[in-house]
Image (cartoon, rainbow, N blue to C red; front, side, top):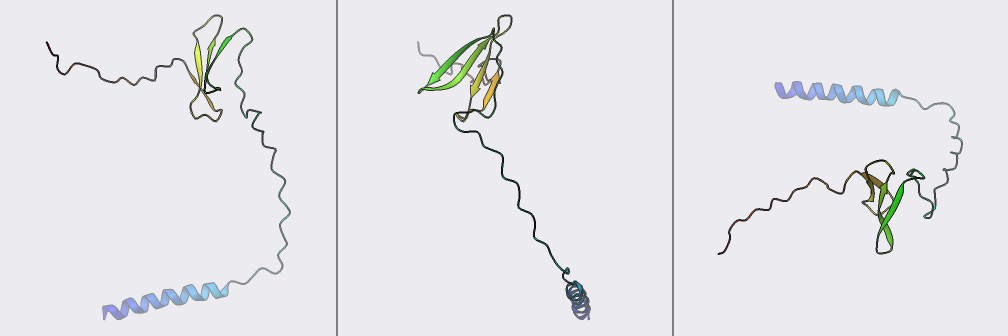
Length: 114
């Protein structure tokens, strides 16, 4: 008896869904969409996408590795020096106030030989 009740309820839901799908009609006449605008120009490989402003009076030192600039040390005339580091190698510079990343490797003697 229970099984028949489940089958009847399921068939009612299927019939209701099928009738609602058939009742939908297509819109009368569709118009094509206009052409999208062209994409903005992409900067070339020689032109950086983001410029980091450095003051005229600041002293900038380049640190190179394999012919590429990987880090800049910027020393303001009246302030603490900071570093601009290219961590990924694609020209995205991150500012670091020190080169210390905070990772401390525990180093203590386990055993000493006399």
